[in-house]
Amino acid sequence: MRPWPVRLGLVLLVLALDAMPASSSQQLLTPLRFTDIGSWPSDDHGAALAAFRRSCAEIVAEGRAFARPVRFGGERRQWLDICDRAATAGDARQFFETNFVPFKVREAERPEGLFTGYYEPEAEGSLTPSAQYPAPIYGKPSDLVAFDDAAKTATGLSYGRIVDGEPRPYFTRREIEEGALANRGLEIVWLRDWVDAFFIHVQGSGRVRLADGGTKRLAYAGKSGRPYTSIGGVLVERGELTRETMSMQSLRQWMARDPQAARDLMWQNESFIFFREVELADADLGAPGAQQVQLTPLRSLAVDRSIWMFGTPVWLDTSVPDGKGGEEAFRHLMIAQDTGSAIRGAARGDIYFGFDPLAGERAGRMKAAGTMIVLLPRALAETLDGRP
Image (cartoon, rainbow, N blue to C red):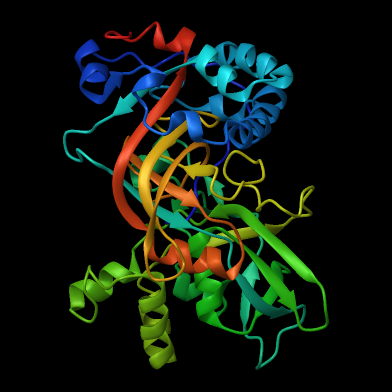
């Protein structure tokens, strides 16, 4: 689940693949051939190529993804060459098979991958605050800054504020909701329900239907730097819900029974997300993810960005909720275009389901094991021992 990535990197740096012992990559990655991937021929490779081209647009124009170390990121030039070919590729399947090498991902601590889901929630809101619309969505404040190494060491945090020349943690969720940022002109919109605001924070984007008509689209702008706490995990620890019954739906039901207890529970998560209003070029796609490209339902994947480069094609073989109380097989090629604070590990992914009610129903119940296969550029694959 969300809260969202740190997605900065305004200075373009071209970073080579991090040095690591050969045994490390061998233990994590097993080279395959495309004929080893079941259901590969039957997928819609054209849909994956369309999403990949959107990633290429960012790689070519900005290359923000290369502004920080990525374990299996390679060099920007390796991706630029492939993006050049993607622009004119006619046969999508042949494009991927020609330019990439597949590797099965297997972590010792998680032999099977773990896959969850997220979506773009919708809520009711107003451009003016009132008793009916009490919950503000905030833009990023100017006093929220990225800490340098000394400040990180002093606070244990990556973001915060400077007070009298000293680094300090940013305000907690409770402090902000009780007025720490009031009267600074940061409010974008006010929502009817604090719980709706919280879940927009968790998902990292949202749609707000305005009381006087119209819709606002919200995209991630930054986070406070305070640690993220899963409130679902808190309820499990208390014994009020179980791991087996935990889902977004069961969590919201619990919160609806006692709104004040829900506020107290949400305040256990000190992390706070800030947003920006966006105008989207394609209304059929989602809000921009961490790569700053619009997300494609069931083709965009959130990954651990310290391990996988944005734009990396990823084959998933798992099962997903069908929206009718059952499950269905999910074997598709996706593109890594997003990340999240809870997405940690090589064989870990968060599937973007979209933005309609069915997407919310499916994403809220998504949690399954499965197989994850990454497609790495051939030039990068040649640097890894044990390649085919």
